[in-house]
Length: 385
Ligand code: KG4
Ligand code: ZN
Image 1 (cartoon, helix red, strand yellow):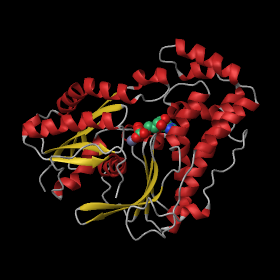
Image 2 (image 1 turned 30 degrees about the vertical axis):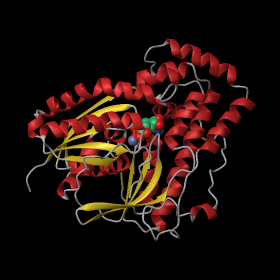
Image 3 (image 1 turned 180 degrees about the vertical axis):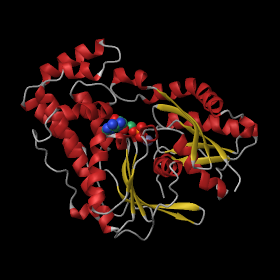
Image 4 (image 1 turned 45 degrees about the vertical axis):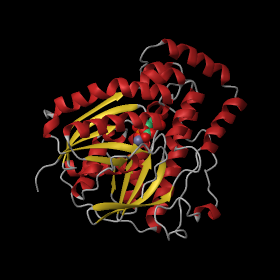
């Protein structure tokens, strides 16, 4: 089969990304321009600022991706872009640019669901290692700042089918990491910080009640990807309760003054190191951070493995920004291997938002000639099916 080079473009949230991927199997270049510094003072992504930053970054990021890949625009076989889900204004920047590029170059344009991209990040990673032998059906946990989803995924003809069997009822897991970090006067994004601070605390120190979804809710098929599957068991998540529990702990243990002090000091340090954070975190805060992370990881791992057993899947994929978390990776490795279930993660650069995953997910669509209609637009709440 001839080699296929796809340029991926991703702009769904706060990263402007472009990448060239060969035949869904090899990353030739992978450029990510993070807007973290822009959003940091606000403790979260500001949608309008995100759109403006994408507009600023998109041309140089795509040029760099091509230069690093040593490819010309003309040597590309197709252009792929994230259609959704994400911030509408942010998505529109990538889509407008991709449409213009595809039109000017007379190349096929492929629209990709961001969540499908996260799933294909793992497949891309494995193909790069020479592993083309994944067993199906696969259960994929997509866990990021905007999503906590469980999908049964299978190749079908030349495309893929997905069935959603779990989602968050409120906050996504990454969102909980970010909100708790903000609440404790740590920086943004919170996930990587909590990941690095947690090993310095005692995870047994604070007991959080397990985030439980009632049995009745687990049979709600409204979000199911396939029609006719309304009675299939569901494994939903909920992380707003644990965030409130952290807030209550802060109030009942009078931590507000020390949090304010930490916030004031850290804001004055440009690019604080982990030692800066540690120097301004007391034992009680580190214990709280460790206990929070432990509880979220425990919930993600136990529900995912319960779903894997119920649906008798052959393989587990864990992907999305939170899949970069060390404790999550260790727990999945340990507990899935106990169940005899192979578990795969993307490397850390492919875990968080990137465009290589978009180009990889576009490859089977390219083969199936599943191209975007000329009038397609951003779909902020796009479902995966
Ligand atoms: O996939 P991603 O880059 O963007 C979305 O699609 O949301 O995920 C970003 C999320 C943020 O909430 C961030 O705090 C979280 O992933 N994250 C982590 C880690 N690295 C990023 N959460 C926990 N541990 C990490 N190491
Ligand atoms: Zn993402």
